[in-house]
Picture 1: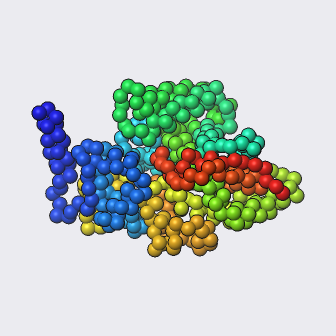
Picture 2: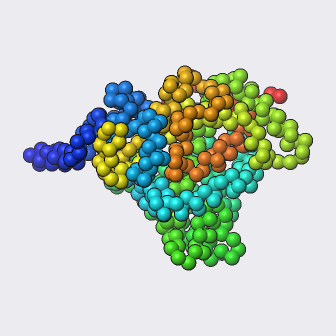
Picture 3: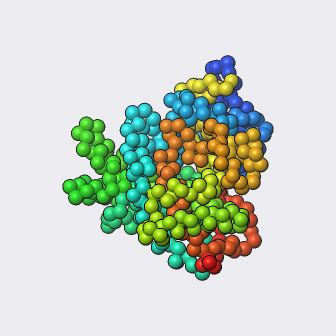
Length: 461
């Protein structure tokens, strides 16, 4: 009887939650089970199939209930532009509550208005081309540290790319100064990452519970680091995003709190780590599978290398601006892999949208991958064809870093670390995929199965 009463109460709650006084209907779709919704189906299925099947059944706009939230999915460029650009004030950026807790509620991702504008200016100050062009040598040093360790070994590409992207993210977040707290931050972040995509069950022993404990310790560690950097401010804030945020403390009015600084530093590491590593893994996969393309990229990089040797210098920012084919390969990888399959927004008020009603508080998800794989915008979308980017894509059809005021401010850094790695990797090494198992795994970003195990050998020149 108790179970029956609880189920009835949940049903009544869900009916109340999804009814509305408007004359416009809710989008078509299924809300699944009370509270659970369709979350288990999302975790069980290929996420791309999950969305594609519902789009085929219900159209470009449909509803669902995932990760504890009622949601509306949109899969047309025009609708995505409305949500992300023209009517962005009606749809604030948000994540499910479990993700927000883990990253930190003061992170730039979850806000709009004056606070967001202020933070974006500060974050962009760390990632504009003018700011990161001096990082080429530091990123190159990281690459040159990793590559010899890969030689004549079999490695898990995804895990190695995570290590590489993490080291670059740490420089972008904390600068070149190696504080005594940095190693502790690395370990705590890795523990946090393990629970980030788990079911949000805050029970003793669960991955989510362990991650939340790590998040608390990470916050305490960052506060100590912030205190140390402030005390040494006269000797320089240490660089990176942390240095920029601490520099804003000179404003006597409305200073950023330690929690605001910590949440945004953690948020930048999250944004700069997993996604970039996943894209790099796909880059190696696509170049491995397209031998002629790999040789063409190599020839382009050899041309850059000759200029560097003749001038007796290191790789520089301007060199990375003269890699058109390699850049198109990266663009096509971003489109084909579509690591960021969708993004979360939340309706800040009741909204009439494309003939439907979206209640206040509902999540709205522009489905980037569905748009990137639409044959109307990218003919033969499953074919890996970098030449398609010889002509700029139609507006709002290519959004690997999002769109509008909340697009990823670190996109240039991500592309830079890909170019630097490919420059050295393609000119000095070759890699062979180990095993014959093909396919995709999700965690949650789509990556080749088993992380793409490869054997790396020196290139025969």
